[in-house]
Length: 586
Image 1 (cartoon, rainbow, N blue to C red):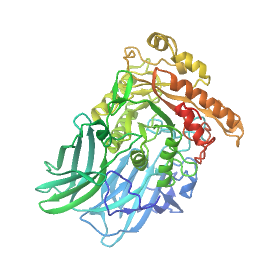
Image 2 (cartoon, rainbow, N blue to C red; image 1 turned 45 degrees about the horizontal axis):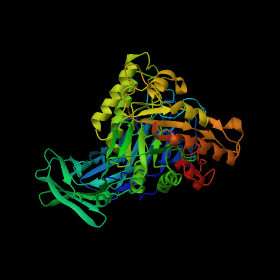
Image 3 (cartoon, rainbow, N blue to C red; image 1 turned 60 degrees about the vertical axis):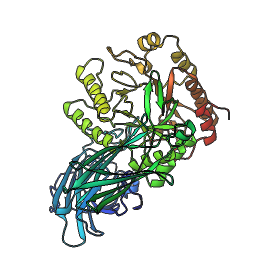
Image 4 (cartoon, helix red, strand yellow; image 1 turned 120 degrees about the vertical axis):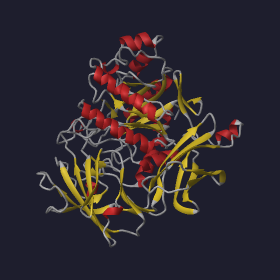
């Protein structure tokens, strides 16, 4: 990735230093090394931020390696009162040393962590970072998403990701600085909530100036005092009243209006920190059986997107690749994506915010239930919510998928408690978005009922869901996927029903069938198009659904059921896909 794309797009500083690029690297299969001063055999290089399993890293070793080490000696540009080192994501357990001083111990493979390394810096400009990453492929009690625990990818599981897989960077800051920022659109009052937390030294008379723009028009220029290093304010926007003028300020996929922001932290008259950010005015809600966007019913047309690339795996090959994925989803007629089993790079969310694409965020699953696995899941999920809360594109949280990690929901109270606990925790941390407790089936606490149904026959799909009495017929008698849709004690209460997985038509004439996988198969481009159009026609016309999510966006390793090939080239013309997705003539 280029060093010029700031990795945290809603809290941007002008001065920063990317540490992506060439690092020293070593495997430690026998766990011989404990600290950087051990005689580590730095026998190869790696290109950060690509995982060593990927070709893009320069290594491409997909074998089992439980422990690996990274080292970088670099010239630090400048020196501030505070030096903060950031890691976008390291899978799974990371220990970090600066100049042989242990500065961090972080567990969780999908969420960022930042370290104040000021006291560990050497006197000159040259500094050395050493990172140890521990990632046991056999540990099914940690959140791992679609990473395979077998040597070779099989079925719907893919190559593992070990170590650094998102951007590493460093910033020089004042003694006191803006540590975190949270935006909350308040649709009914036409206000923007702004929560600011300062970090570093406690200073008297701290204040923050907040400016908001819509294009060239200044909407607000306010200054707030910080109390206990915090400020929590509501910024009132001038409500134009008339719908046409009001709609110009609202964010949606059709009109992704962003409000640019600048925040300046001061102590007395001294400027300490200055950041750029953005937010948006929009609301998401549930009203009876409909999903609502900006107070109006909104039909969801989503595609399941797993966020893998052939040569770089979970890490996008470039920022441009993330932008292209957003553009392709829109070009295929979708207004949103369900990011499946991945906490996506914030730069993807930035492009979804800017270009207008709805995003469902789903927690990567653990697969063995225990108190430890649920504690790990809760910690990482909480960090993910905190990281992504302010993105306007993000509209739904999904802590569990298809009962993965909680396989005995119908018989074990502890498993049911886990789903209900994460549902309510998510609603507590973010009261502004709907939450699906467990997507696919066996629902309990949930705001949307998600159904997974890979029946390849469009007419069977129509017959299953175009029923006069869905409560009796669908929820009591029919079981898509062989699973009950709602658990005992949690009858359907009228929530919106979304077909959140269906389709999965495999089509890849370049490979023999036994090397690929899908839920059904087409042998020609014409057959692929006809099958897709027939399925989408039924799903679009079924009144029970307030939306759908087709599987899937692009081929992913042995799964060839994407609308796009793995290299993002379309299998049939994008215009044909878009017309079928939207159920309009082509």
